[in-house]
Length: 317
Image (cartoon, rainbow, N blue to C red; front, side, top):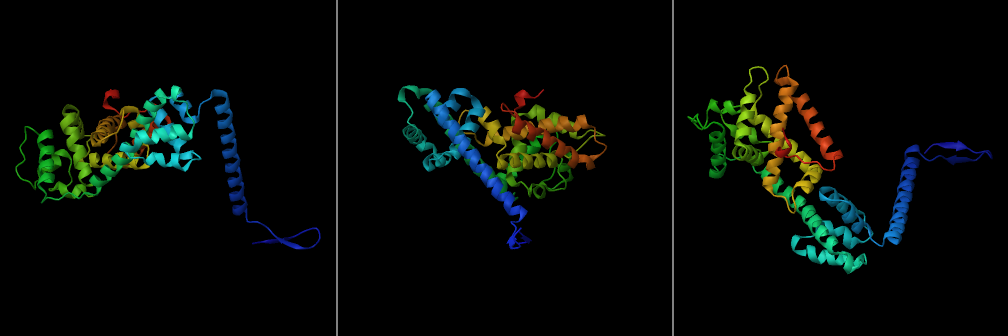
């Protein structure tokens, strides 16, 4: 630590700039916390309601759940902070505990109870769904697995119903955007999750999937359909793992989301990326990374800054 002389001639140690900055930041955060507690106390006196009640009264849909989760995480009660991890079968008991700890009037909590139940189901459901998605992502495609092989052949039949696959290992796979003669090597990054996403889009939104595949064969702006799809599975996974999809799921699913809800997010990304790509009029496929990053930033901005964000094909034109 550097030294400097005082007016009396004695040497003192000067605090490093980085250490002083850290202390200033901690002091600022402490003051902000005190201010927040004071404001909450004033609002409680004026309105007669706690923060959780005010949130359920003021906000609706996904915004309500996002703010409830934030409030639970900041609570001074450890019991309440732990409620973001409450199991579905314990939700009713958890709400009653909140009512007790927060001294909520029974006459005023009928809407509060129903709102809190939905919020806690959505919060736990999101975390539970991510665990399921992660399991699918790390499940390696295995050509000796009959279920995996059946899914792969189903993808071909859904996208190419008029064109029979002559051999399991074939150059024909390139027609739906795989890189080599055996698609199993293309699923390494996203595992069986990538295949399930592609099959879902092709099965549930067959007309849109085949339209997208047709665009991928464009003589000037063409791209590898399946490879791009697996890349968009990675994008959807990143949004999920970072928590950005919370807004979307809380806005669109009244309760616990499941794998098909994640599949719908992929379907949206696949369809919208195709439009984004064609509109960009790339010179060649070497521009994929740039256009993919631009698309990623566009969707990310919606999820971050639009409270009513819904990545739904129903909202696509």
